[in-house]
Image 1 (cartoon, one colour):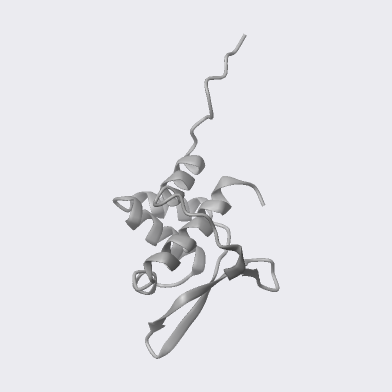
Image 2 (tube, helix red, strand yellow; image 1 turned 180 degrees about the vertical axis):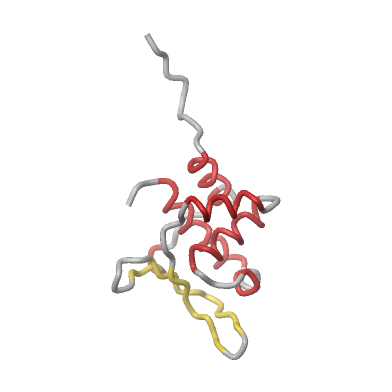
Length: 119
């Protein structure tokens, strides 16, 4: 008979914990909406500049295995989260690096939420 000793660690669960464990951030649902395709949209508390454009929200897509592999290449939890948010939002790393700390943690929680459960 097989004995269960706890949750099984997989690359996806490890990736989710790397993203979410930054501060145990809980998503603030009042700042989250969905676009026409059902993708999460996070309204930023502090907009950032991308060249001449002002970024006021981030639209996320579900991360792929390639996104997780790219995240795995980064060193450290913050760098992994920057990479995963960048790929999930299709925004350049330089834009994600400009995010206010609170917005950054909220964005990381959106990615972590994708990785912690199926659609």
